[in-house]
Image 1 (cartoon, helix red, strand yellow):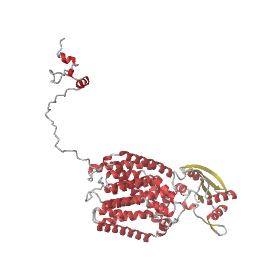
Image 2: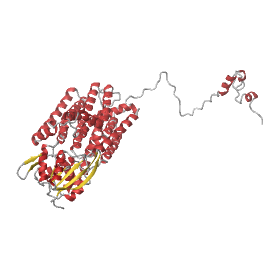
Image 3: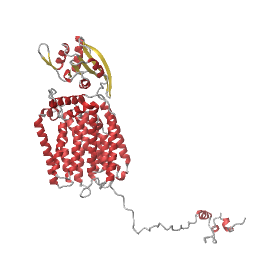
Image 4: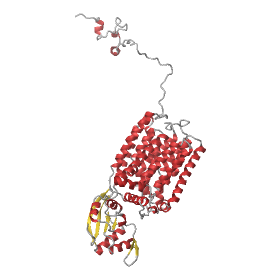
Length: 580
């Protein structure tokens, strides 16, 4: 076989670095290390032929890439983005509904009381039945509004239907929150706000709790959303929105605490489209219309006594301020903290351009600061009011009112932590995971804090007969279930809250002496006691009196477990009481 390479090429490893091949210096004449480097350098590849359908443009002198946009989403909205946002909101609502529906327990005393009051009001309004409840003197909301609606639903679907009604109200509130935040900022902030609000403990709890709190939150949410919607429109639209705000206060009197926030929000939203004078006039019109409707309704109904006893002049408790602050921090601390972050970062810079349609592209620092402080500070109103009253009664529900207003700034806080173009998504993941964990645990714990009467009610159904007099703790829950079976009614039961007993010799006794006298004279056919780590003084006195007189015997002792401990129900029946 003949070799086609010259001897010089073969001596140099076949690469042919000589004058005859590449015209370079003779590698053998260079040092050894330079010879090695020369041997490892490959010849440049020949240029490829132009395919004829593409070309490479030579860069011009001084040409550079433009910097990326600093805004997360553009200020302009579109149909596709609105559709995607609504689709994601639907997912959030489905998750919220599933998390609320997972909560299970028997009827709480407030739930049973409001449904029964609604049936009484329906009988009085439509059938002329006597209204012996006196609900307008101690209810914290108009008894002809939510209780009537709840009773109408209860007549068809039972307690499950009434609780589903509360879920519908809370889902509507979340939807209004998204719409409100989207108009103030953008879709991304709206979705973040909706998620944090949807998984919070008050939202999940109220979503399956049959009281008028869910309806009041819903009406406040609808009012806030409508005020932002009508801000650029005609001033006269503030009057019908004022009707919705007044209805929210009528449903629950404590909702009046958030009326100043609604007025200021309307003024700030109107200032985006009008000058200062017109914005202030719109706020004054909304305030006057709301106040006029409330005063007219108060004059026509006469609910002033109930408003004073439950809201304006409510009796003070003895709960220390630190305990109220601690519980408020557990239930709302995360969302408020993120809202503070959103307020501070939004006040410092508006580089993300969340505001659509602003006349100067971004709002001024004063406007941004006022909006953030207003919305975030509203979350502190309920704890401050409870500290003033020194009581934690209904604190877990009232916090949800303020969280709705703080949620938009919390949504801004999450978007700012993630950065433009979602540069740091780990912030949103971490905050969402913590919020979901807290909401799940806290809502389940509080929904299981009262005793379940699933075993007590069947036992009472075997014992209680129509027309008998019973003394009970609990009272409302068992009576709610038994009255649906026509076995008893609320008039046949007395609680340990108050008694005015007339003895056989004509004396009127109240308090512990009244309970003792009623038991001693055999007025009650049966007594239900809730023994959980001991008994209150009145119940303990009744228990001792029944043991001493011997007129009552213990027929059942039914244990139960709650999220805070355990106990048992005791059913005592008078010896000579008739049997079913």
